[in-house]
Length: 118
Image (cartoon, rainbow, N blue to C red; front, side, top):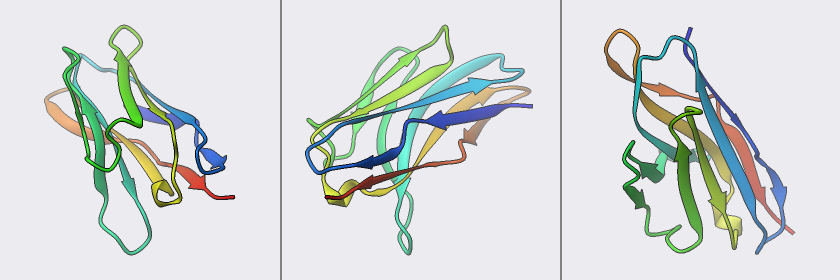
């Protein structure tokens, strides 16, 4: 059974920082791109950042310069360092990873709540 387990969400004041982590486990043969998405009630899930297995990154304009995505291929883990957080960053954050189990397929984590409020 393949799992993506996220952690690191919580409540933080505006201007603060949080670090999300997501670890993939199970019968994984290979891992491709990994990424973070977020969703607020009533809106579509949106891409935050992605990273390929060679380390190339992409960021949404709304988080450029504030968020940093990184990964450790040996640990099957991806992180999202979030600095200078704003109230509009409040959302449920989801990890997504392209994994080869019996074929290439996208897997999602369960989501972790990030709330930015004073």
